Length: 96
Image 1: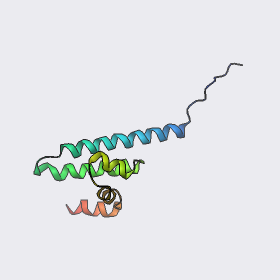
Image 2: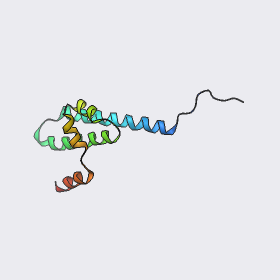
Image 3: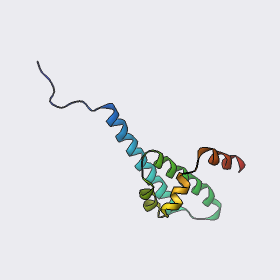
């Protein structure tokens, strides 16, 4: 009987690794957007996109402190952005 000596990767572990990678990629996106926001006409749209990327990174397990450090914001500010409920965000989006 021939058997393998190493177990196959567990799907749960792989899913967690992918989720962590996605969080870091989204954090990189937020950081890039934070560092490239210039001009009044684009600032509002880019800030909203940066905030969505930060919320998505936080939802995938990236801690608030790491997000704050990466985008050079205070942790309290990032916590306010990431801690808002979906209903409040959706309400503000529909208002304009």
